[in-house]
Amino acid sequence: MKKIAILGSTGSIGTQTLEIVRNNPDLQVVALAAGSNVGRMEEQIREFHPLVVCMWAEKAAADLRSRVSDMDVRILSGMEGLLEIAVFPQSQVLVTAIVGMIGIRPTIAAIEAGKDIALANKETLVTAGHIIMPLAEKHKVAILPVDSEHSAIFQALNVNGEGGGQSIEKILLTASGGPFRGRTRQQLRHIRPEDALKHPNWSMGRKVTIDSSTLVNKGLEVMEAKWLFGVDVDQIQVVVHPQSIIHSAVQFMDGAIIAQLGVPDMKLPIQYALFYPDRRPMGGKRVDLFELGQLTFEKPDMDTFRGLAFGYQAARTGGSMPTVYNAANEIAVKFFLNGVLPFLEITELIGEAMAQHRTIKEPTIEEILETEKLTHEYILKKKKIW
Ligand SMILES: NC(=O)c1ccc[n+]([C@@H]2O[C@H](COP(=O)([O-])OP(=O)(O)OC[C@H]3O[C@@H](n4cnc5c(N)ncnc54)[C@H](OP(=O)(O)O)[C@@H]3O)[C@@H](O)[C@H]2O)c1
Image (cartoon, rainbow, N blue to C red):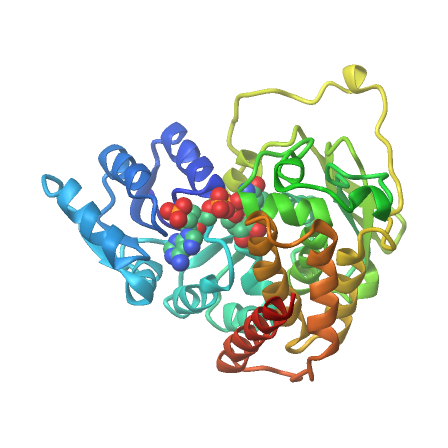
């Protein structure tokens, strides 16, 4: 029986992780955490019987306590609660399916407690990869990628019997191009949140869906790949592949390319991470190459989608710059979703926040969190001027 804890169980990745638990009786959920969705958490408690649960907001935790007073479950709240879930003694694997930099501290605590990490929360690696990866090595825990692209790369490396990646020449990181592929900046001027929330191939949480439409998600993934696979930024090539069938590939030093293909469904990478190195059966749709006919590839348009260009810049600069990129984006996306920031301004704000930042080379966790705070303040101050 493999026992797991999930941070962000009520979200897109969290609920898909629970679908996998439902289909695999040798997986058991022992701990869950979420933000404020009390109704969904109550359903999850009644179905999966975790021993301990955390809701971020104390008010939500209090509401949940009274709803499940007939159940044998401990309800916690806040960062203390998240940390307790992360290190919960009975769990072996922590699925980090929370959104945002809030995932950093629990991930570090879980690694220090010897838990393997099934990592969806890319913000943690983007901003603190220089701390997380050596720490994981020190505590001999596995960081198992859940992001579909990184899972594809991980699978390609495993096919090659190549855990470390010494023989990688290039990583081919695929991108669907999002809903606005092929459009000009002029055509992007009046994009509304409801347009950007329509991803052509993937069904995801709101924030990551917006990030996919600006290609900021791909910028974050470049940084995630750099840390996960120990490659230089210049070895990572983003390839626009609108069908989202090739989830990414590795080109090895002899020129061979190994790719992973499949229908766009996050359950496969989640399941692969949970059972690694084994593969388990999974139902559902299969890729039919005859039906597809052709797979196409394009260079990304980084003049229109400046979010990717800034992502490469932040990745090359390193240090605290990826935190600025991520934090500026987080708050800009919130403003866009609230209807107070035009679509194109999301990436402009990221560029401005990066331009005013003086990089700290090897930031500590405190410096990373302080950089996040200062970046948020910088953008809030700008908003007052608008
Ligand atoms: N969705 C995908 O297909 C996909 C693919 C690759 C990578 N990822 C990455 O996976 C992560 C999660 O994405 P998602 O799309 O699943 O997001 P999502 O649907 O928005 O879900 C986010 C989850 O985090 C919880 N949460 C938010 N703030 C919290 C806090 N302060 N304390 C505790 N829990 C909190 C939410 O709880 P409430 O809803 O209860 O507030 C929810 O359970 C992100 O880093 C994303 O980039 C997602």
